[in-house]
Length: 110
Length: 113
Image 1 (spheres, rainbow over the protein chains, first blue to last red):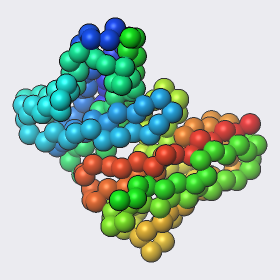
Image 2 (cartoon, each protein chain N blue to C red):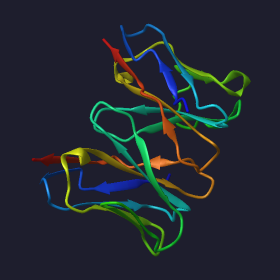
Image 3 (cartoon, helix red, strand yellow):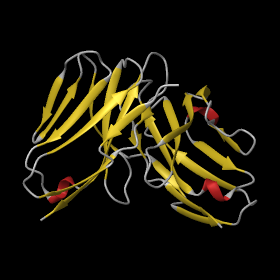
Image 4 (cartoon, each protein chain N blue to C red):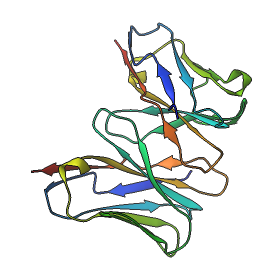
């Protein structure tokens, strides 16, 4: 079945440093979604990417969808303590259901 | 707009007991999902409904788990009998349709002792 892998599993940065998490799928995706889960909270939708090579920005967050539609990345510029949480990518392939990666846990020290 | 509601928020049971979780999706959302999230992992889909029909239940352990969505609105997920490895957070989510962004409820944290 479809697999979605994320790296790194965990990253600890100092406030102000940049952060990137990478997502790779075993199959070509029709779209990819990103979610953020704060400690003790539930996943919250961030963005959806559909087109090959698509780049979307939300303030300090930049999302990219690979040309082959099998990988994606999330980059945060100048992290803040409010960015703490686990970032999940979730891929949709064909008529399958959404498959979540294991997530990247981000810890930001002030 | 009200979000996805779930109850109870926490549940502690002994193994071999039964438990049921309830979910009320966002009004107008046709698609409802139940996920199991084990600590340190991403949500794993258990079952997906489109209105009151099952779209995907391939990862639902059908010997002990069951779910229904009567009238295409509320849904219940039941575990009977529970095993230690069922300890997890059970998340309900809903979306307008297949492939759309999902809105998650607060989850039910189940501990099986």
